[in-house]
Figure (cartoon, one colour):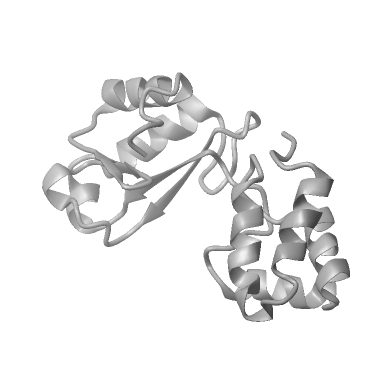
Length: 164
């Protein structure tokens, strides 16, 4: 998957921040958003380093410090599964197993097509809809194996892109 911005467009964006060093995190976030895989790749980090006259290690330090910045490719859809007790008791593990089988990758791994990754996390605040998956800000609740497979299919076909 290539970047949405050309090299020249990235350079122009970086140059627009040259007089605003305090805005470098915003710059990196904007550059990340233009990447189809939602991360700061090595070439982009080098461009920022070259044009803003900061060491590339400084770019990576910022990326590792701020959790909104990524240095590894990210999935288009990060499926978050609740691993709190209420969700686990009513089928959370079955949801995780279904995702592993359907997507063909273990947890925290991006699928080959770059569309999906899934992660078990706690405290998502939707225990009344357990078991559920959260994608972006949208909660898909009261899932079973069939509904989970349908959700993956719907996401593959872009059915929720306007809501997530």
